[in-house]
Image (tube, rainbow, N blue to C red; front, side):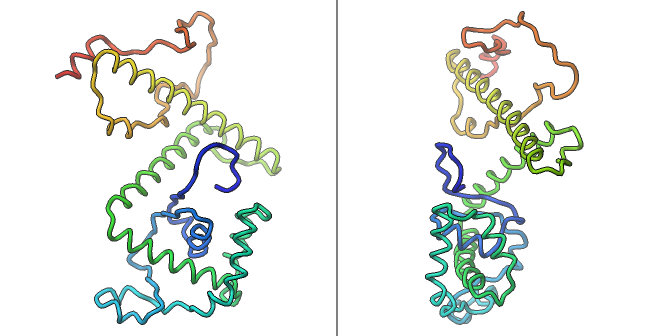
Length: 257
């Protein structure tokens, strides 16, 4: 999220249970980014506060040990130096997160970051309980990621979709090729979905905008991923170099009903 060179404004990260940790909660918040994961076994997770749990009445059984304020305060300058190094790309964020997550409890800096992360995880958990829209958003975003992974697995059918190359260069080449093919399929679908919606609009078909937000460019049903490929110059194309849409004239009447 910090190292990409695109124009996309990435402000939130949605992951499944494998990417959830207190340190990630802390780092994401300190970087000014939203971390909104789907936490597995949420009923087994504890909330944390600086006050005694009994202060929260019926919620008291959900709270674990009290947060260590002194640990956070004593390491606050060190925490900011680590975050500044990530933001300035002095170090690779994935590397420092891997190192911090691998430390045992006796590493005080890692322990301080965990304390900060427990604050953010507690606040996020309370939002999760309270806000159905948040739960729907996270689930929807994760479904998009799973759909993209399904497309990648369908494209990388050779070797069962696994990278068996030992060399880093070959692995990177295969990964780049896989990303290129999946991106081409997504672009192909986006262009034709846009043309289909525009064509229906020109025919007077009214489409609910809420339905458009549910369209996905990650399908590959009409794309031949295996078999023989025949390249022909005789394909009928329009002025934009695109194939004609398969929209029957009767579609307008069926939509009006």
